[in-house]
Image (cartoon, rainbow, N blue to C red; front, side):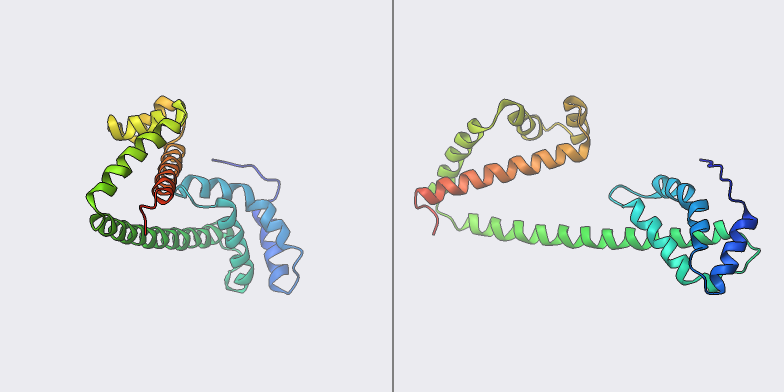
Length: 197
């Protein structure tokens, strides 16, 4: 992607020199020169879930804070994009760690729930299945089809997305909402029957 700018390297170096001398306003020249190409580059490089605007902002703030490290006359764009690359790597690592934590946490919750269910009397399992049927019938047909596709027909998420005209992320969210709704419906019916302690 190539973005033309009326601000050339000479103007950038002049602005950087002024910022290094203690003025703040000239940094706006730097931002105006690199804002669009930096955001475009980040949009291409960033994995899903990364806020490109936030990373670009961090890169500019970091560059401003470390402006004394920059040698005027070298390639400011390359220096700024290197900062942005490290900001992007840091954010990607942070999000991966959060996702790993949540995956482990959710797995632990699932194991606890399974243990709890194994301790339940068999008649509770039968009641849960009956309630599941009732709760499924309360769903609209357009919502029920997602459950049918995924759990009866074992259709992959990408195929479900194509069939429904939605993104894979939207399909995942829809399935999560349906599961949550069914879970709440079943638990409510179990509680109403006095089946849960």
